[in-house]
Amino acid sequence: MVFSSLLFLFRFLPAVLAVYYIVPRRARNLVLLLFSLLFYAWGEPVYIMLMLFTILVSYTGGIAVDAMKRSGRPKGAKAALIVSSVISLSLLGFFKYADFAIGTFNSITGAGLDLLKIALPIGISFYTFQTMSYTIDVYRGEAEVQKNLISFGAYVTMFPQLIAGPIVQYKTIDAQLRGRRESAEEFAQGVHRFMLGLGKKVLLANNAGALWETVQAMTCAETPVLTAWLGLAAYTFQIYFDFSAYSDMAIGLGHMFGFRFLENFNYPYISKSITEFWRRWHISLGTWFRNILVVWLLTGVWHGANWNFVIWGVYYGILLLVEKFFLGKYLEKLPGIFRHIYCIFFVMLGWNLFVHDDIGQGLSFLRALFGGYGQGILNRETIYLLYNNAVLLVLLVLGSTQLPKRAGERICAALREHEDMETLLRLVFYAGVFLLSVAWLVDATFNPFLYFRF
Image 1 (cartoon, rainbow, N blue to C red):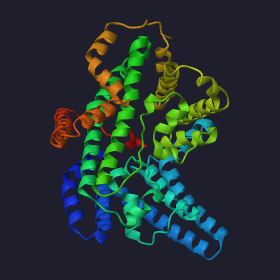
Image 2: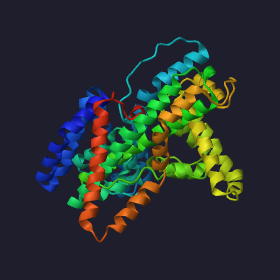
Image 3: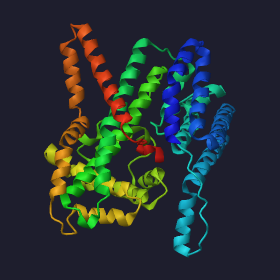
Image 4: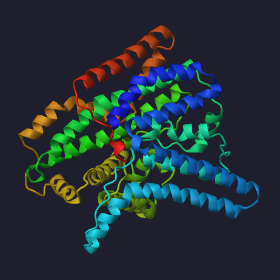
């Protein structure tokens, strides 16, 4: 399903861009809306009506909130906001958590109720939060009410970030929906950003994922310590490059259509504390969730209807509270390298919770990480995996830092007086990334973005 949507995107995007720039400006939101609906329906035809219903609920909710505020009835405005939010959250709760609730109830009571086994609508978590952000912004007076249904629909369904974010709050693109000025320079920036995302996904994330799958397939009781940590490091890089790649591609596509989406990542793996890590990771979600225990429990549940996500959310909630009230002041006194090691160590343990839906399997892998099965530090297979993936691991480490960006900036600065050379170098770089990505895709099986599942 997701694969067919992406094929649809790459097949028809050039034609859509052509139509988008040919039509008058006042019709461009309509073009964006129609293509976005087709993009979603192509891969998720059953749930297109659910999305349209959610759009109508929040659209009418925003109008009701605005009308109540203008008539001097703040309680009525609050009631309209609550009704709109409850409807949207109820739909999200039913489709994402109904079976989880039934299964938990069965486990506690032994009732044996049948699971509903309803397929999860792709992207429902993301577009639910976006529609809610609109009514909240209108209620707070941070955005004007949007009375143009086409423009509001374009905001909710905008295909670049529809499936896996970043979560675009309405107030950040309100003015852009009403009137934006596209340019050749911005379009070129979008192409460059899209190519970077494509390279991250295909050349880095997918290969890191292959290494993780190799280690994950091993029996935990027979896995040496270094092999287990190598596998977890591979997943640590996979989930970052996979998700940040999608964000890069979404931001790039946004530029092509004249939109500027906010950044979603800021080199989280260079962080020196868990608090800093969550300021840098999935920034668009962080604008909704703050660092307290109850809310981080909700953060875990938001990622999925499974107990490992609940535990993962509580895990980070506890870490953040410990840093805030006790550990933070001591961390500041340590050298940067030790703070960085501390942060990455606990982030990696967090990803072990995140990746294992089966809590028992997660505990078994955790035991292997600390030598609980007596398999020693390494074996021949460990050396083989390190040797075959040495270049990949170096690229993953470097790519998660600011070093490549700074090197590129210095090279461009040195060539500033030779504009033709700088342009040629950029073209060679992005063309190389594109050709390598295509070559890899031709000879590889399809690997969907990890965050499509959320």
